[in-house]
Image (cartoon, rainbow, N blue to C red; front, side, top):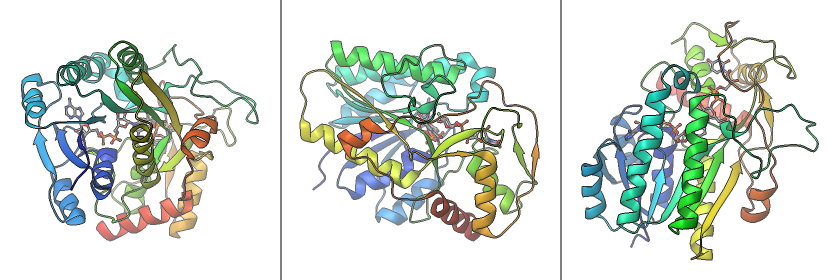
Length: 342
Ligand code: NAD
Ligand code: UFG
């Protein structure tokens, strides 16, 4: 007997992993996606892993009537909100699309949640909300309490605004919000059936590197090398998606166990606490897969942050957050996956 009914946006990269793992942990999921950045094929793979197909609706979050029919049909306990436009550079070209898709229509979703008394939500926020600052790395990492206004790109602004809206809802409408700020998720599901599968040429670093490694793309474009970092290329904290999802479930169970009735708005950074430059990722991949990966230094990608990493105390102390999978292992597994499926 399944424990809960969750509604989620899943055919994308992180959502598809979440559905599989929540279902395996005995939570029922209902999936809604407009397939704008995902493929129906993922449903077949999910069925292969689980042995059955979770309920799926091809619906745009902007279609409030259709969404309401789904809310009427199920007695939801939770929403896991993954539906988002997420490319930083694209958000600078199309800021109105990003505000429209990510904010306005999330509000329509929250209206339905309020109307049908579904007040629990896990929200996928992002490390992008942290303002860039060059700090003494021993002491001054970002904490969840650091102010994140002064956004430099619309993607960031949409995450920032949504966090503020959810905070208001937690105070005034008694929503319980688990606001998870991911660092950079990489790799695929341990079953190797689901993976990061954007509909176009990948924006994100790891799938791009792998497509170069299997000769689908000629070389990696590295977005310039004049940043004040260890080797002048961008620095990030890359977290394996399997670790990331395990912590969604732990965070989720933490809220359920504590059964907090009063307002609740909790932010956690989810990271590995290892920061790695683009060149380091490239070199580590080459070492792990025994293959050279051609690259070129090209134009700067506008509005990106040079370094993104954070303080680890809160998730560690409250949720006992720890990651298990090393970067090398993630890259090795990623390679196995791409190499087998080319
Ligand atoms: P993704 O693009 O793979 O998945 C998002 C899904 O939302 C896609 O399947 C897309 O079709 C769907 N979608 C978008 N707009 C929709 C709409 N109007 N109606 C219905 N469905 C819609 O992205 P992802 O990497 O899985 O990211 C999931 C969440 O995690 C996003 O909120 C993203 O901002 C956040 N996040 C991602 C990363 C990362 O590096 N991947 C890092 C931090 C935070
Ligand atoms: N990069 C390249 N070449 C590429 C792709 C990326 O050099 O072809 C570099 C980028 O400049 C950046 C790093 O690799 O320094 C990582 O880039 P990604 O595009 O993979 O990731 P971002 O850090 O820019 O953004 C990602 C997601 C956001 C999320 C953020 C959290 O796209 O949605 O991580 O840190 F919010």
